[in-house]
Length: 435
Image 1 (cartoon, one colour):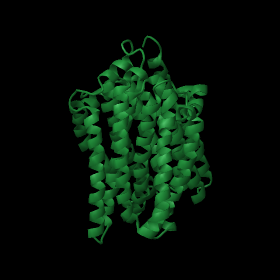
Image 2: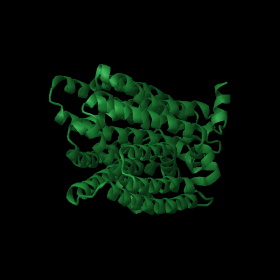
Image 3: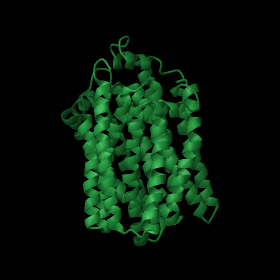
Image 4: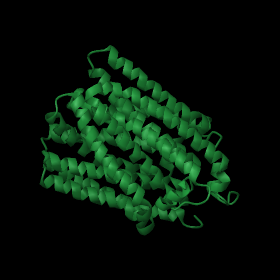
């Protein structure tokens, strides 16, 4: 009966249901945990001082620079069945440490800054590890059919996390939400192990022509370490124009996102006075965003992918954001900003992220884990840091107003759209028979 229901939502082949459901549940609980932490992060980001946020972006970038070689070493030496669970347990333990730290110290300024940096690192490393697993488990053809449904697990969790925050942030306090988040992350770990076991026992079902396909040969090696040196990801990216294109895509995406984020933070700082109130506001926005994303992922993504293809979908969100920034430039009001930022996030979850993760289904297994992690962490936060500093220069240094920021954002989004079209064409060429 469950398989029949799944077949109404996705194009499902025999043997795919167990690993699909385990993957969905892993992402659901992972994102429930993270989306509980994000409103708290954004609220404490304001508490630590609006003028410090661009510097916090640079702190995150430096943390990524230091941690990426360690992550590269882990992926080169240990099988995913060993190191991925330890990644999850490590971050769950960190949440308990932060909870004790918040409770023991009354001045939260530096704790808030440390927590802000940590959540950003947590988000990218945990999700990068998860999608490295997904790109390894599923083939390119399966990604087009199934990744939209799996990403719906993120939006499902994205509904649960903000809903808990919205209900409990003021009554119990934002700090105590960290304990619930840690528990959800441990539940995600249970389902991740099930996904690993399902894939290990079901490689033949997931790829019937196992002996003849590169994807099946990759999954046959899934339980060993990937190999390569500590800095292997850097050489993989700089040797490949395709991977450099993905890195540039992520960089421009973060520029578009960060400008909107910093504009929103400035408005929220004026509208709300306490961290608990800000947490509830951010949780409310997250809740509506995730509900809309969930509906699109369940009902539309696989069909849009089939109707229009990767190239059109990849360029659709940049084009949409060029229009959104132009609207904000013409009417730079708080509600316009909230709507544009919410639309951007819905489109990101429902379209851009499944497409971006699908881009890695046509690269080697080593690149799926190592180069993808580098792009999803190092390039992503490098984009945050540089765009945060540029925004600060425009606003504080040059006195640019909201309208000027809007027009500059529109230009960046237009360049992002052109790059997306080229990247989509490269993906199609790599996936063509004989390539």
